[in-house]
Image (tube, rainbow, N blue to C red; front, side, top):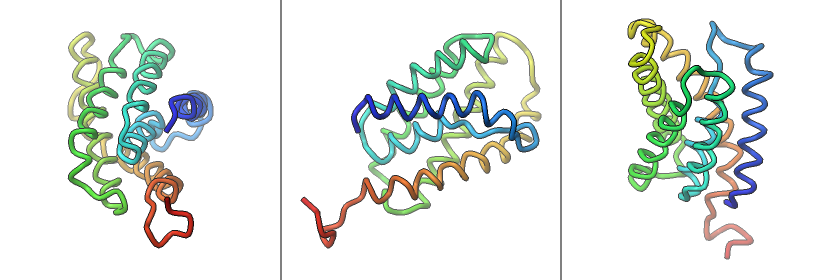
Length: 165
């Protein structure tokens, strides 16, 4: 996918995440749209444009919402690298693969983010973060399944499709 389209989609997701989703928190947890888009685009399109755009939006989100700059970008880079490394193993057409990557990506990002924030400022206990992880995973998986159903028809083409080239 072209990097311009990816950047526009990430911009819209960043604006929605920063404005609308904060009003609809589920037990204090909102889905991370940038992470969901990073996982979906990196898994489905097999190019690194989503990783580059996620790095930029990680810095922007840290400037806007965090005390330490660069932590989200490093987390997005780690998740993007893991998806690029392990995506050839799983089938794109299976929704279970998206659920696996969504779950593991959310857990890796949140624990990595907690670890780097906890090194500089001892804000939260690890058990508190672990209690919130099922909520984060559920919120992100709902978004990941929606993205899956939107993107699967555009990504996977079969020879029996009428306009397959």
